[in-house]
Structures are given as C-alpha cells and as structure tokens.
Image 1 (cartoon, rainbow, N blue to C red):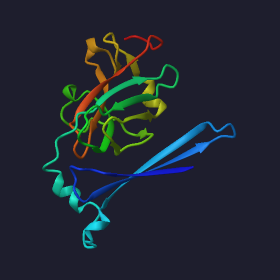
Image 2 (image 1 turned 90 degrees about the vertical axis):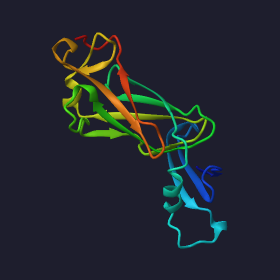
Image 3 (image 1 turned 45 degrees about the vertical axis):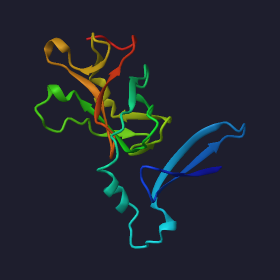
Image 4 (image 1 turned 180 degrees about the vertical axis):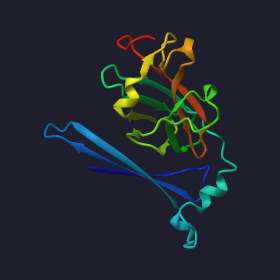
Length: 193
C-alpha cells in the first residue's frame, strides 16, 4: 500500500514537499514494516525548468528559523540497540534533512572525529514536520557494544567516569535544525561501572 501526500511549505515559497510512505502488511493486515521518502521539488506552477530541485532550498536556508527538536534516546536491555524518539513541537517550520550520529562525549575528546563507526541507522537525513514524531534505531558492531557500560549517572558510557570514561551520545543536526547532543539512557539490567 502506498500513501503519498503533498504539503506546501509557506516559509519556502515555490517549494513542494512530496512524502511517500510504503506500508508492508501481513496476512492479518498488521503493519510489519514501513518506509518513508521525502522529495523537495520546485513548484511546477512556477514554470522554471532551469531550477534544480534544491536551488530554492539553498536561498531559503538563510531566512528560515532554526528548528529545535526534542530528542530522547535509550539502549535496549537485550540487544543494546539504541532507540531515539524525535518530536517536533514547533508549529511553524519543517526540520529538513535531520541527521543522527553516534558519538563519544565531545567535551571529553581532543577535537578529533568522535563518531562511533561503523554505526547503522534505521533512517537518517529525515524530514520532521511540525507536530510530527519519528523513531530512529541505531545499531553498531558487537565489539563496540561489549565495551559499553551503565555509568553511575544512569547513562551509557565507555570506561568509568572515575577513570576518564566517556559518555556515549547521539548528535542531532540538520539543514535548518539546531545542533544538540543527547545522552543515551541505560537500564538496570546493564552492568554498572
């Protein structure tokens, strides 16, 4: 089943967002998987075929307000996969190309690349509409997960805080999204440092 919608963004005159959602259902009509793709296109009523799909987005980037998303993340007890919930509580502006990265606490590193690689995301570079919620599942290798621990602060970390351990965090930013870094909550079933 394919559902699509077309949304005009008032703050981005002459730009249209087309959203296509595909739902996979089982024999009981329960959704077993869905995927969503967003496409930004120049408004066809403008009649300018010389405009690329992203040409107008670049011009509007300077005038759009930054979007502040509410993000919370927690590690699953068994798999140690990280699930993040993203809520867009503002009513005016769309969060465009919202990107996630699994990182070590940037305040504890020497300024070099602090991303945890490889990391795999159920979705990334997503569009978050006003009032919309979305979930992103983050997974990495078992070797990485084996060194994670629940620090006394109640968050996932690497090493111990007493011996210079690092918090494991999720960095969120985007085309017009305010950058933020979120601690990852842990549960009582994890070993405590």
